[in-house]
Length: 122
Image 1 (cartoon, rainbow, N blue to C red):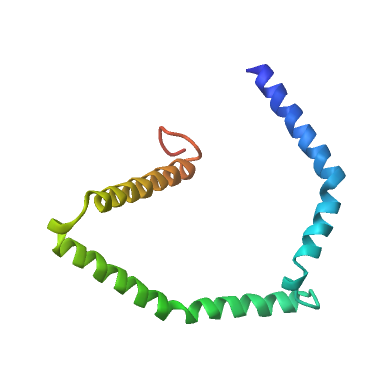
Image 2: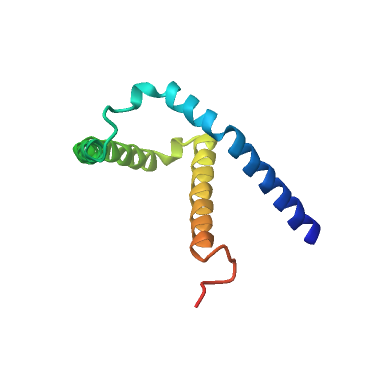
């Protein structure tokens, strides 16, 4: 176990040195490549304005998203009504999707418990 810890510390040290050497160049390159997304002047006021625009744009998109939700729900209801015509492939995809949702739920529970499998901390 101690050797694994030393290996981890060594890798962390190497990564730290790499970032210290190349971090500034990477930062400048990243900004240059994405210059079209940078708002001028880059001030706090501009950031506040952009956050408000994002919020209200998301708020304005709610009616479209609810319409899509109801269409999807109608599709699922139609599938359930005609389940005798359901193909094995569709049932398999639905089962895999359900298992994926359950797996993400379990992962969230584990993270919420502080990465323990036994229970919550008191």
